[in-house]
Image (cartoon, rainbow, N blue to C red):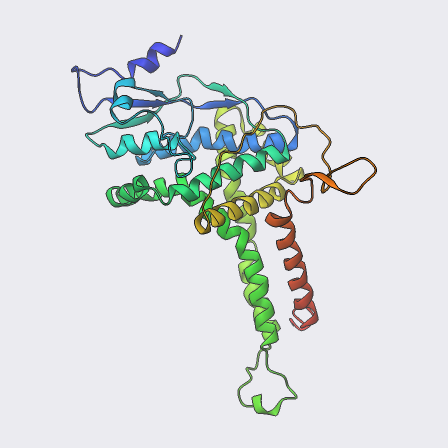
Amino acid sequence: LMLPCVLGEFRTMERGDEAAKQIIGLPEHITSDIGSVGDFAAGSEVAFGTILQRTYSVLGARMHYGHPDIMNKQYMMQQGGVSKATKTINLSEDIFAGMDFTLRGQGRSIKHCEYFHVAKGRDLGFNTVLGFFSKLSSGAGEQILTRQMFRLGQLLHLPEALTFYYAHVGFYVTQGLVSASMPILVFAWTVVLAADCEGTFQSFENYCSSVPAAEAMAQLLSIWYSWVIFLFLVATSMPLFAEIWMERSFKEAVFKLGKQYLTLSFLMFVFQAKIIGYYVVNELRYGGAKYVATGRGLPTYRRPFIGETEPGTTKLTKVGGLYLDFATYAYYDGMRLVLNCIAVLLLGGVSDAG
């Protein structure tokens, strides 16, 4: 019933008007909020496909993100189609439809309207969700190298440029910085404690500060990680909270937010940030992005710890399991972080903090 209204957005007063809207974006209704991991992934997709798309549209930097957009076929044919074909640098191929469309200028506009929602299923399992983000992160790393990104960075005004940055590579780069910040912080804490003056070493008598290094670091960290950390947690959840409040009710939004916190969604997103950071950095270092096939089925299946072995032997026939899948991305960094924390304790970072 509402499709004629959507198609009516393409009409103009004069035939061939260059200011006509040639891409109409529609929101999605996520149907795969099954289980904790599926609920976390669905919540992220709901916020991105609705309230964030509206914001990008208002700020003038909404592109095409693989969402259920309706496009003017003639305009898409003029720019070589709806996607790019180079399988490495154009790994996130559908994104380039909006980027090329915007670069051609001539008053072309992309509108996000909500005449109806289009159903979509997301990944449900831990491995498939993280595999999906590994593909997106590798694609974002390759986007940084493209001529479309370079030219849009030169042409867009500041509000559009900042919106475009956050909607494309900015989110992934920020996740990489967040995932790297804690190990760097603990390492710097260790270095400061190890470099503190020794009271028994007389050569430093006239140069030692009156405040011990442990106490100075404690004051610094108490400012950084006070109530502000709760503001960060709430701010990252606000888009989803606001969208559910507008669509359903305030009670439903509070229930949804409380449920995600009680089911420890932030631990899942910390793990996700590690995966995103690893793939973005590796893509910029080495390249080699490739497509990762992800399913939409129920993720209940048996998974080995290290790999599959031949019956009666220890020889691996298939390498990969719960440990090896994530050792390079998260477990090794976690062990380094634990060792640095032990070093902080041994150097008096807690006992001498005052």
